[in-house]
Length: 111
Image (cartoon, rainbow, N blue to C red; front, top):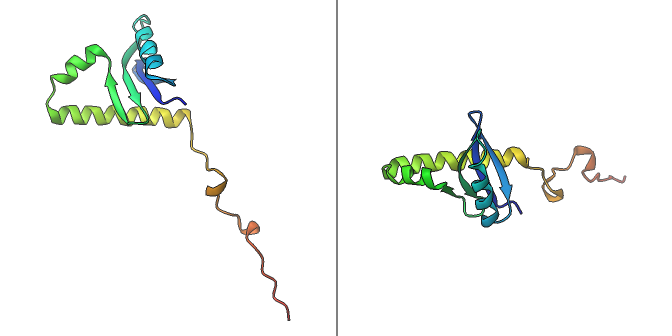
Protein backbone atom coordinates (compact mmCIF):
# COMPACT_ATOMS: atom_id res chain seq x y z
CA UNK A 1 0.00 0.00 0.00
CA UNK A 2 2.23 2.82 -1.32
CA UNK A 3 5.22 1.73 0.73
CA UNK A 4 7.75 3.45 -1.56
CA UNK A 5 8.14 7.07 -2.64
CA UNK A 6 10.19 7.98 -5.70
CA UNK A 7 11.63 11.41 -4.90
CA UNK A 8 12.51 13.86 -7.65
CA UNK A 9 12.88 17.59 -8.22
CA UNK A 10 10.82 19.66 -10.61
CA UNK A 11 11.14 23.45 -10.82
CA UNK A 12 13.42 23.45 -7.75
CA UNK A 13 10.71 21.74 -5.68
CA UNK A 14 10.70 18.20 -4.34
CA UNK A 15 7.91 15.91 -5.49
CA UNK A 16 7.22 12.19 -5.26
CA UNK A 17 5.49 9.26 -6.89
CA UNK A 18 3.94 6.64 -4.61
CA UNK A 19 4.58 2.98 -5.47
CA UNK A 20 3.57 -0.33 -3.90
CA UNK A 21 6.74 -2.32 -4.62
CA UNK A 22 10.45 -1.62 -4.88
CA UNK A 23 10.55 -2.83 -8.49
CA UNK A 24 7.68 -0.48 -9.37
CA UNK A 25 9.59 2.38 -7.69
CA UNK A 26 12.79 1.50 -9.57
CA UNK A 27 10.88 1.55 -12.87
CA UNK A 28 9.35 4.93 -12.01
CA UNK A 29 12.80 6.29 -11.11
CA UNK A 30 14.21 5.11 -14.46
CA UNK A 31 11.34 6.79 -16.34
CA UNK A 32 12.26 10.12 -14.72
CA UNK A 33 15.57 10.12 -16.62
CA UNK A 34 13.59 10.61 -19.85
CA UNK A 35 11.78 13.66 -18.45
CA UNK A 36 13.91 16.74 -19.05
CA UNK A 37 12.41 18.88 -16.30
CA UNK A 38 12.33 16.18 -13.62
CA UNK A 39 15.53 15.34 -11.74
CA UNK A 40 15.51 11.89 -10.06
CA UNK A 41 16.81 11.84 -6.47
CA UNK A 42 16.06 8.39 -5.08
CA UNK A 43 13.60 6.02 -3.44
CA UNK A 44 12.27 6.20 0.12
CA UNK A 45 11.00 3.04 1.84
CA UNK A 46 8.36 4.03 4.40
CA UNK A 47 8.43 0.65 6.16
CA UNK A 48 12.17 0.60 6.90
CA UNK A 49 12.56 4.41 6.76
CA UNK A 50 15.59 4.04 4.49
CA UNK A 51 16.49 6.17 1.49
CA UNK A 52 18.13 4.72 -1.64
CA UNK A 53 19.90 7.27 -3.83
CA UNK A 54 19.71 7.08 -7.60
CA UNK A 55 23.04 5.69 -8.96
CA UNK A 56 24.80 8.96 -9.88
CA UNK A 57 23.88 10.60 -6.58
CA UNK A 58 24.92 7.42 -4.74
CA UNK A 59 28.46 7.81 -6.10
CA UNK A 60 28.61 11.41 -4.83
CA UNK A 61 27.05 10.35 -1.52
CA UNK A 62 29.69 7.63 -1.03
CA UNK A 63 32.48 10.27 -1.23
CA UNK A 64 31.06 12.27 1.70
CA UNK A 65 32.19 11.88 5.30
CA UNK A 66 30.06 9.77 7.61
CA UNK A 67 28.72 12.92 9.31
CA UNK A 68 27.80 14.49 5.95
CA UNK A 69 26.15 11.25 4.82
CA UNK A 70 24.09 11.13 8.01
CA UNK A 71 23.00 14.75 7.70
CA UNK A 72 22.07 14.47 4.02
CA UNK A 73 20.36 11.13 4.52
CA UNK A 74 18.26 12.50 7.38
CA UNK A 75 17.32 15.55 5.30
CA UNK A 76 16.08 13.36 2.45
CA UNK A 77 14.12 11.10 4.81
CA UNK A 78 12.49 14.17 6.38
CA UNK A 79 11.58 15.52 2.92
CA UNK A 80 10.15 12.15 1.85
CA UNK A 81 8.08 11.85 5.03
CA UNK A 82 6.75 15.41 4.62
CA UNK A 83 5.74 14.69 1.02
CA UNK A 84 3.98 11.51 2.12
CA UNK A 85 2.18 13.38 4.92
CA UNK A 86 0.93 15.99 2.45
CA UNK A 87 -0.37 13.28 0.15
CA UNK A 88 -2.08 11.34 2.93
CA UNK A 89 -3.19 13.60 5.78
CA UNK A 90 -3.81 11.80 9.05
CA UNK A 91 -7.38 11.31 10.05
CA UNK A 92 -8.24 9.78 13.42
CA UNK A 93 -10.08 6.48 13.40
CA UNK A 94 -13.16 5.87 15.57
CA UNK A 95 -11.17 4.82 18.63
CA UNK A 96 -9.03 7.99 18.52
CA UNK A 97 -11.89 10.50 18.52
CA UNK A 98 -12.33 12.34 21.77
CA UNK A 99 -15.99 12.34 22.71
CA UNK A 100 -17.77 15.65 22.55
CA UNK A 101 -19.25 16.95 25.79
CA UNK A 102 -22.71 16.17 24.43
CA UNK A 103 -21.71 12.56 23.80
CA UNK A 104 -20.56 11.87 27.35
CA UNK A 105 -22.87 9.78 29.51
CA UNK A 106 -25.28 11.75 31.64
CA UNK A 107 -25.94 10.40 35.11
CA UNK A 108 -29.37 11.13 36.48
CA UNK A 109 -29.66 11.74 40.18
CA UNK A 110 -32.89 10.51 41.75
CA UNK A 111 -34.28 12.05 44.92
